[in-house]
Amino acid sequence: MLEAPQQVDRPSPALAGPGVAAAARRAFLATRPPFFIASVMPVLIGTAWARAAFHRFDGLLFGLALAATVLAHAATNVYNDVGDDLIDADAGNTDRIYPYTGGSRFIQTGLLSRAEMTRLALGLAAGALLVGALLALLRGPGVILLGVAGLGLGLLYSLPGAQLSARGVGEAAVAVGFGALPVLGAEWLQTGFIDSGAAIICVPVSAWAAAILIINEVPDIEADRRARKRTLVVRWGASGARWIYGCLTTIALAAALAAIARQALPLWYAVPAVALAILGFWAIRGISTQRSARPRMKQSIKLTLFIHAFGCIAMIVAILVERPV
Image (cartoon, rainbow, N blue to C red; front, side):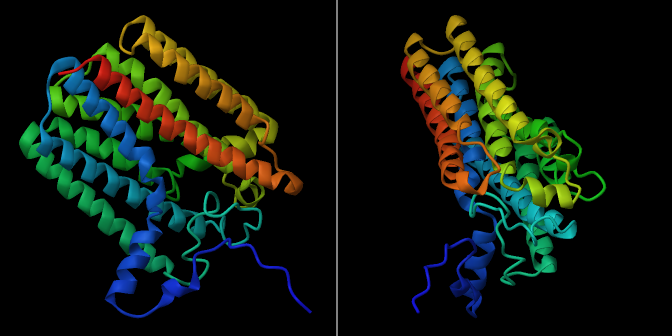
């Protein structure tokens, strides 16, 4: 009898091969690199704003900031898997939509042990702090505050005891850590100050980042509830997730229009801003915990990732084209 093809919902067993190269590949993929765009884009936006609005750009500072941000993001992703394994949130998560929700599955599939993932997270965090120390030598001790805030929010999101994700504030931490902090931090590194223009344009980025987390929490709602990981979605359910997602979409649009009114963004940016809001409200229709709705749910997750990526790219283009150096 022919069996139906099984859906790929875990890392490939081929990653378990021996050798240094295979181990390096496992370590790299355990960081979930496709999601680095969520931290890279805000740094690009803040740097673009500093260059276009104030004619400030230092390539070395930009490169170091990007490296520190990606290392911190990677450490956060890996330690999130460790934290969720400690509370048994991922092991029994049969409703996950891989690779978007339910973690990397590296611990659950035996590709890396919890101890190995912990060491990897600590190594990545140390790398981020090392780059941060170099930035502090170049730009002063203020960098230390930025670095500790960013890395701290990421690790405290999953750290047992603190575990911001279980206290209903994890979504706010992600909005700050993947929106306001990298945008404003990148501007500060280049200019030495933070202005109201950057403060406005970071709001849509923060809202889009939070929307990614909100929609990704929906398939994991039962596993998180069993593990007492009381995210906002666990507290408010799928209907609450739709409401929060709608508010975030509205905030992103309102902030973009405010940036246009302030002339921080050009008038034509209203077109992608409105289009992205329409896509956001369309994505809400797919938010559901019903197994029959999983294909639509997956499409809504992909659409949310697109909204973040395209919105950030359009913003960078708008900043650089309309404010040429």
